[in-house]
Length: 82
Image (cartoon, rainbow, N blue to C red; front, side, top):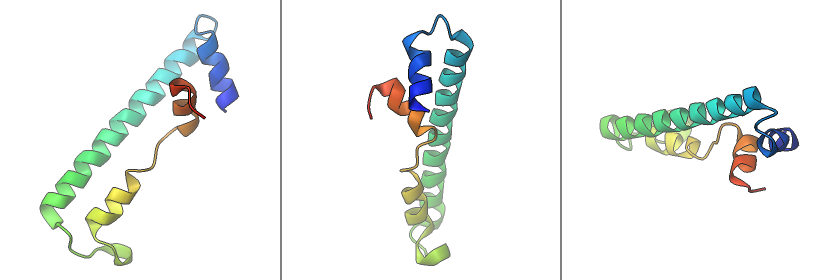
């Protein structure tokens, strides 16, 4: 996947539609991350550290999900990291 996205970013003129798709996917990922952050804040405000599912507090469980990154291969190529 990284090689394919790398080809798109290396020649955005030839792959205009795919480059726009990549930008849309990254914007979607950013919006999802913002939603998750706001959800975490609302849960913290509403429930605090009361126990929830799986023996963790809701806040602790949601905080763990903040590490998940949608489209990691695309981010890796876009940011120039491995």
